[in-house]
Length: 118
Image 1 (cartoon, rainbow, N blue to C red):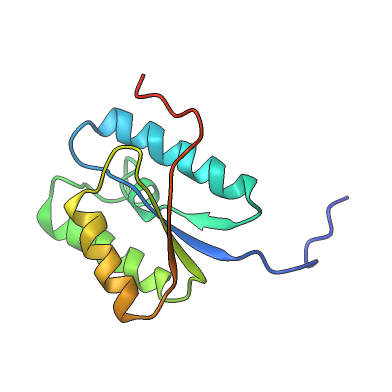
Image 2: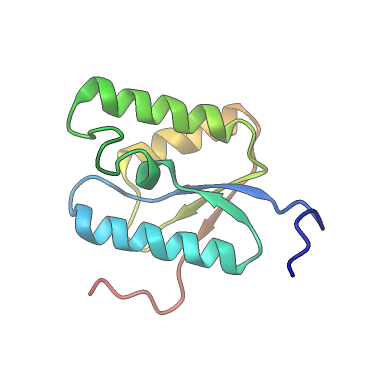
């Protein structure tokens, strides 16, 4: 049986590209989540969660903005923001970095070992 309340895992905001090649970017964000979980972290990639069918539509500006704002609200409670950069830096990632810096949320830049674009 797993002890549920052993020790608090660090809450981590995952930042990675989304727009553009959405299929590849979703696969990459999932790999980033797996990498973070493997490090003993408690990650959230709001761009994966909020863009699932039936939640928010990224192509609708008001819904996209709501998703971004909500992810940033959640992230204000994070211990760390992690930027996964094998696919480069999107404008959203650049904006998020400025946001986390303003809130004094520490951040790291990571790459995923053996990541391949396909």
